[in-house]
Image 1 (cartoon, rainbow, N blue to C red):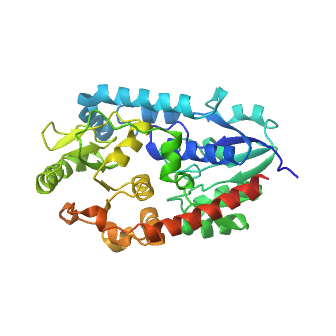
Image 2: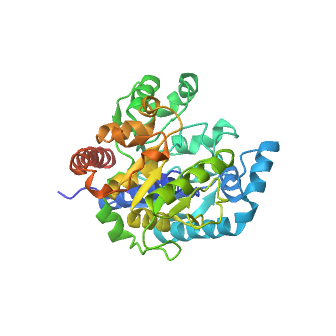
Image 3: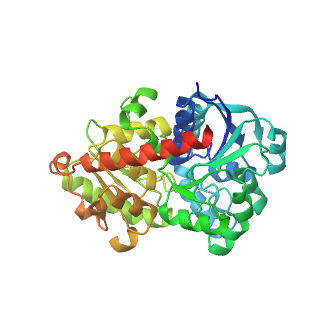
Length: 385
């Protein structure tokens, strides 16, 4: 007997100008579509989220935010191009519903529109995420699927830094889900405690597609803005830290004999020099290309780490804390699962580009990721069918 073809409503951070957010939305949509279902991504874009990503730097009101805005003025043109690249990718690759929603109660019109509602992935149940930090709790309600009369499931939703008291506030909504999952093992226990339900540990959606599948679906052309050979530095560092880090990157470039393509969306005013190339304008497609063609990747980003592993790139995960502390983060957790905890560095002097392709054996990582991916797809298949 054929599997039932379901109409799926997916809600997540699909329109944040953040590489991980948009690419995880694409991967979730693609995976569910491959299972034979009809997927529509609900175009929920609260005004707060649009403000955060459209302004130069905006984190709220106050002197510090205003000063941060000023540091980004020299790259305003690059940021606008980056926004256009994101919107082009979203409109081309993500099947978004025809209507856009800004207020939670507007989604009540979708109460009976789907057979199954899917919430996730990303930090959509984290009150401290960029989109939810400064607004009322009701703006999380759409991600908790309070509008839906159909079967409700979550995929890899992350509460991130939520406290136990904060998690208890969303517990009653989670009880209404037919299936729950989280992408961090540490989150599974916390969500189980407040919901009373079993919470499956699944992988981030970007790992549901391997490197070959990413390249097959999104043809990646090498950027004309970077040299033939380069290191990629992708970081979420803020302007306050940027000056010192850029100085260290120049030293790294001279030491290894390669220019560094610098992708720092929140501190984009990269010094103009031979050692550094500012690639701030990159959208999701350009980001994937930068990873694919790099000689190596240095990053402090979770998704920067995941795509480096997926694309078999020599990589280093940079932390300003201790290596022991890093192991407790979401980056550290995935590194331990794929036996790459030794890729954590605390100083750029630890980056060694001498024959790096021979120093990383991805075989064990591929096996671990394949097991993780298979388990995660099985969870999705069973929850949707």
